[in-house]
Length: 119
Image (tube, rainbow, N blue to C red; front, side, top):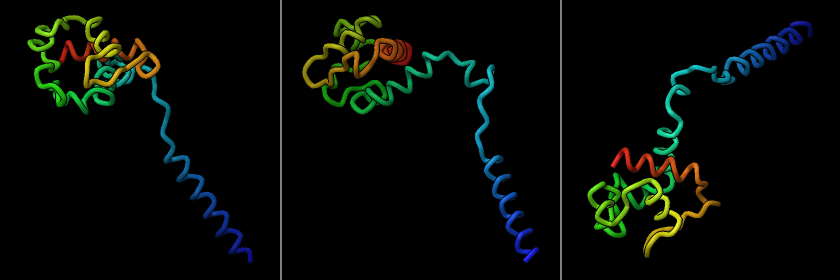
């Protein structure tokens, strides 16, 4: 009986150690991931989440003449971040409307900056 008690305690100890060892440590300040500008990372991730289904690689699956590439954007009067945000908020036919509840201003700005920088 005594061996059984020791066995159970040993199993509990191993279980506790394995749980502690598997816990993800908190990120420390100054890690390379935190050193990146937040907007660049967020803009790309937000673009992939909200925009890339219809605008893969800056294209346009609904209207090929209205891509996100600089030449097409500018030909369609979209030259700045506020212009891009304006299209998000009040798009033309075929594009989903992204109001402030769906996409807060900070996120819309990050996407607009990503589009200008990338395409």
